[in-house]
Length: 139
Image (cartoon, rainbow, N blue to C red):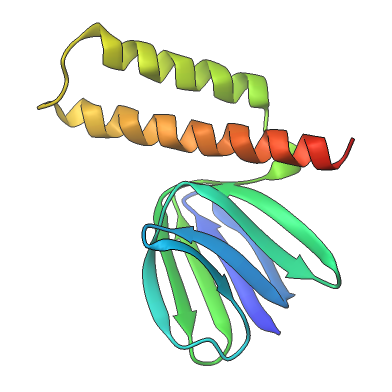
């Protein structure tokens, strides 16, 4: 088993022992099993899935860091993390559209706001995708 914890600026979002966890990183999706080699990687916006007792817990995560320690401990430090069943898809769609409209209003290719808006769009798209996938599975 892995000791698995997700921490955001709002506090601990998830803390449990799991069999494995699949995490989106900038290098691609990785699945972490017990005895995984130590690793630190950059987290990207997407779907994170923790597996325990034949069940899975899906979450939308934004940017951050994943740390895998040699003693079967996995820590995620993310800007945001939200369980799939708690995602408000309509609110995420509105936030994504608002960010896209702001980007279209002016040329921000040299603006610091461009990166912030792009991150918002990526985070909201991840929330939308995870939320829709979870709703389809549980219908």
